[in-house]
Length: 471
Image (cartoon, rainbow, N blue to C red; front, top):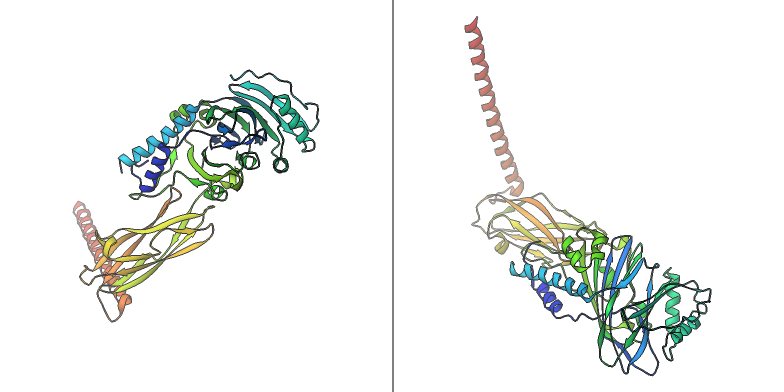
């Protein structure tokens, strides 16, 4: 990766250096007499196409100390649930900062023991129970939403949570997840206190044919009206389409802007993956791409979960169509059109420029409209207009030019080489000039052919003389 980058990446670097490593996901539910705030979320979501590792931590604050319940939906029963470490987040952030800096410089818990309530209901099946660090975790498969509220209330009461109630909004959200075939829910009992504090993250590993990070359930819980910053690190084999995040008001912390003709994305090496998490390394064992997206606002205003199927990963591509040769009379202006068609599966933002030719061509000979980045949707096309303004003192002749289109949102570049011919004014214009040039070319070809024929005749004559002398 080239070691230069623009101002927008620098802003990302400053942001990342100061971003607090506190997080959560899922819905928080507590006693009605206390006020609970979930100040932020951080998550690492690593998906290799068949399995996902979700590393979550929590940072909450309440008006008084109490036990609260966090509920997290998952698309399948976890293969593994274990305590994680804040070092995964710290190391990941260090790696980002190191990479961006390099670019810039070179241009077990409280021992809670309780009986589970409501286990006999056929609509709820307990698949996992354990105390992991500060977490008391129960994972259930909800077969039908009927009686779910009664079961959940009994569960909470048996676990020592006081006056827990599940709102109708929360129950509706559970039903929506079930309709989407997401039927496994984590019930994680943690302590909330008056002081904002963090609890070690939990690692969930589960089978899934899509990348998944739940957010809607947070919006439907007691912390739904909290203002918070949500930061999600996604690690996958390909870049996820920007639309997946923008549709739910998430924005990139790592915009892939161009600087000095080079674009950037961040791939993680085997060593870096191991430093972040050996589990994530075992998920990939190669160099997946890192994405970092954030949201700031009320949880209740988030547009949905982060869900990315195979078709939601970007395969950007485009094609350039224009004339291979451009003829311009010296001392005049000429307009040339170039069409860019988006042939990939995702929206592109691109900017067109010219390279090569005379050294100062880029500064004085042309202008481009549109002159800045344009957005081209999948299957659409955009026409760029070049206005060449050739000074009268420019030497006549042919100049090789390269049209270059670079994408600002993906690491993608395409080039189109053309010949710019500058000719002197004639009555016949460019057509006559081209005819003259063709005649010159034909004459040169004829001279070359004649010389070759003469050479062959001489060789043949010499050969014949040698044969005659031998006889």
